[in-house]
Image 1 (cartoon, rainbow, N blue to C red):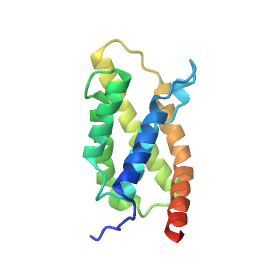
Image 2: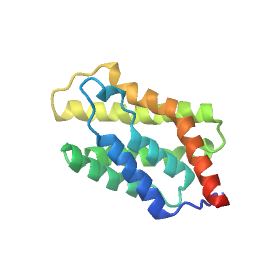
Image 3: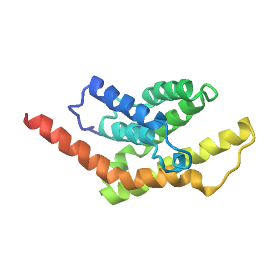
Image 4: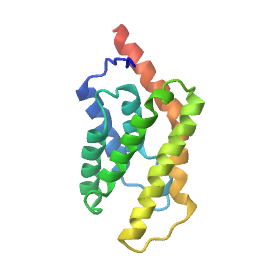
Length: 163
């Protein structure tokens, strides 16, 4: 199976991932935390789908370790989750490319929702934590943002290819 080549350079990929990391840890007012999309997860999915030969489980692991260190959670928790997300992206990559933007958004909801469920399970193992369905809001918001994010990056790629 031939994979499409992308003109995205590794520094550009890491820059966008680090920007997503900054958006992920940016402080928000109380009550607004649950409305924050999983920026890092979205960016990791984007690059795993657009440049699978350059971005994979290793990138998810490194970004997860950085997120663990910044958030002060048990070391390896986010690394495991983002590595799992990158692995799931590698599994669905061949089908993902053939889907419309709406179908991709539904798949993004499933991918991010699965990772959120695993995160909740880990939190219950590591200590007392109440579970309610609001933990799935970042997945829903990420699925809603997916067509916009993809269109934005596609337009940016076309603009840089012309110039």
